[in-house]
Image 1 (cartoon, one colour):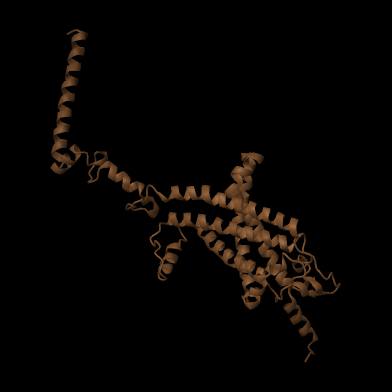
Image 2: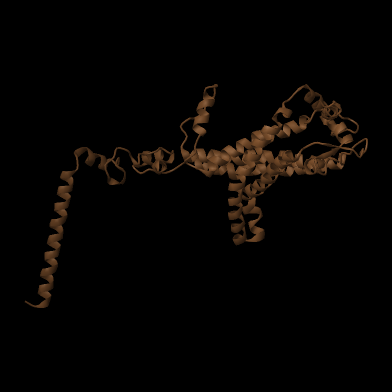
Length: 362
């Protein structure tokens, strides 16, 4: 037998073996499949040619809507292949939230520039007396600067996460921006606890002096004399404007601290579902079965939204307490204020101080 004949015999043998093997697999496969499964495959109801009872379109529709499947691993988030709320979160954060924040901060600067142009610096109408009274002691000033300095760091590093990619990175480059953002994140995470301590101390020290009363209505009716000279409504230690700042800082600070903890420990500390359940007891109709991922996204929206509102308030507070009003900054630096300044802005408080001094010692 020559080589050519041997080659043809070998090829014919392989071909026959392949045909027999294929027929065997086909027959046994058909026998192994249940009649309903075969019918389902023929009708296209089995996705991926595997056992199932949903067609491809319905299966992927459920996945796209975020239906959670069962998983045996500890990380139950893996049961959700597609989290559709992520699209809405991204649109809100990169769209309305960023726009509202940017325009709000720009707007407050414009308002203050216009106010300074029209009103100028608010002077002590009767001039300085040369005598001072203690407005804040050392511990009160420490509390103020602990809260203020930590908030400034948090505001700068927080704004960097929202706007830094568009404002700073083109100016300093990607490498420098990456390093700045990294260390900014670390400082933001740790200094946040100092800010929280400052808020708690503020509540302990000043809450009793910031309870609203009828004097505040009179102060509001004349806008505290901010727009008029020689108009000085009576006030105790804190007037209505300062009370507004106090409660904005306390409520906003506690809210930011709460959402900040949620973001520091995502998927572990997820209490928003519990909060919505409690609110539903008062007539709300809020969802109570929120996934850990959705809770983190809600915190990521609420945290900067509250922060931007606080930044706008604090910018106005800084203006009035520094360049906007003569004699105000001394209250939180030396702790001493001029008597005439105290008489014009906190006359009832000054009377209380003077009456205590004039009381005979027992």
